Length: 172
Image (cartoon, rainbow, N blue to C red):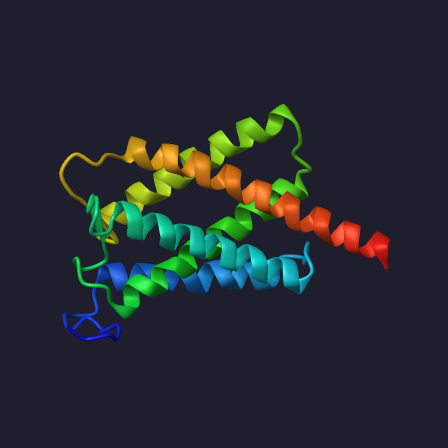
């Protein structure tokens, strides 16, 4: 068994084009939009979102549960890794608009529910272009619940790093 991530030998097809196009467009928008966060916060958000997605995908879609595959099959390829850049950008926009619209209190619950529906809808699109392949009894409702939890965690992480940054400024 090899210890490297092979490039999928099959044709470069629709799912690969979709993922790369999404990444180019999403990061293009990130570049164009007015900056809301310091670079350190942006990097932490991107890293947190992609790491959370990776951990969830490798536990739920991995060997133990094996409920779905990413991209072209069960083998982990470079394009499977590239998918996590989509999650990072999506998480960034989730927090960007949360901060932009100054959502607080009970509005946070509605925002998380709305964005979880939006995320599940995007996942349905990803299923149509073969980015995800559900197995056995896995259904989109499970993903919706996972989005509720992961996006709540993302907001808590964002609040933690922003509160830490404020505390460090006061301490200086």
